[in-house]
Length: 228
Image 1 (spheres, rainbow, N blue to C red):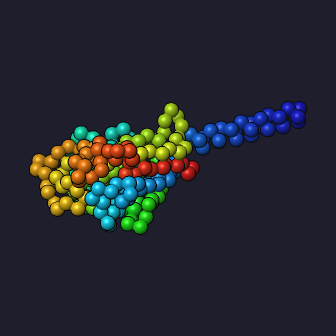
Image 2 (image 1 turned 60 degrees about the horizontal axis):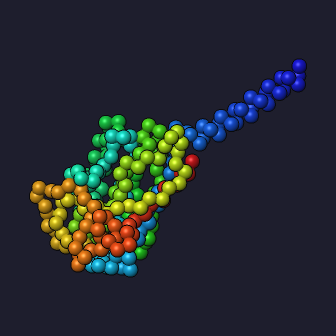
């Protein structure tokens, strides 16, 4: 009888451990590390390359299917325009706060930018199964209204958290300024155009449909890695 009871206890303990492991791998929440890597250099994008090239601070959010912050072919919000033109986060942060108040977003993703001397930055964020998407943007600076980023990328797929993924990012024109090169003077577009993949004449930049016209090199890539 004692042996039978001991066997039941051991069996329950083992099954409990397996259940806990499953709970961890498919837990309600997860923490991720996002690394933004720059390919923007004089060697890679030589046409009118600005000497003080940098990226503004990263700003974004985790959200549900209704919380994206930009869409190709749609008008940019005031917050996206502000980031794309100046690198400032104030208006977009307010828009993200509003999405959170409406129940469309869980948390804000807020990180530093890539300075002139840097090639990458890293930011961490928390995410949940109810808000499994991430979106973020950062300005190519200096530029008229050009930005790169990610919109509505899902990290909980088929009942599992994505462990690690690399993504190439396009470069976008926010449609609010008509400048042709990185250091163009302000040239507001009224009414504004929709968001497009950055494309220009070869004399102005190396971009065509958001990537390098010759070798399809993206200006940035990201690596997203699950921490727990």
